Each structure stands twice: as C-alpha cells, then as structure tokens.
Image (cartoon, rainbow, N blue to C red):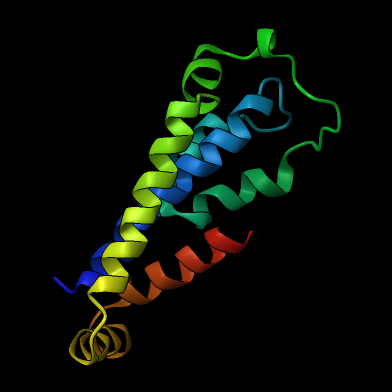
Length: 133
C-alpha cells in the first residue's frame, strides 16, 4: 500500500472524530436534525454525510453549560485525553506521510489518483473539504 494513501485514508478517521468533539457538546436539542446519525455516518461517508447536518443545524451563540451535556459529550468529546489522542494520531499520520515521501511514492500516488482508483481521488477531495470547512 502506498504510504501517502495510507496516511490520507487514516486521516479520514481522525477528521470525523474531531468534528464529533466539536459538534456534539452543542448538539443537544438541535432542530430539525439530531447530530449523532450524521456524525456516525461521516466516519464511513465523510463530508457527504456531514454536510446536511452542518447546513440545517441551528447556530447557537451562547455557551452550553457542562451540566447539560450528555455522557459522551461530557466525558469523551470534551476530555483533554481525547484532544491529545486526536492531535497525537494526526501528527503521527502527517509524520508518517512526510518521512515516506520519495519520487517513487509520489509517482505511485499520482498514478493511483489519476488512473486506478476513484476511491483515492474521492478520499483526497473529502479530506480537503473536511480539513477546510
């Protein structure tokens, strides 16, 4: 497996976890759509699953009281351990991709992206969108 593609594909697991950590604490009582189904689906379908929720959710300007958070949002999504784990894994994936850059891996990645795999191209675009939204 191309190490650049491997790092990219694994990063697609980190980004939905980051979105879950950011969106779940303020998701209680969101209308018209609940956040959880979209966040769970985003692990498999990426931004395509998350976009409808991001467009339809209510904007809240006031902070959410910690006491009103659900168990997952309070103990997992808002925890420093979760933040450190996500940052650490993302940093490792960036490092892994960077140390494996060579003319051969870049050519192989470009060949896979352009000729062989729609999954590679879709994953690249999805990661770019998730990283910038």
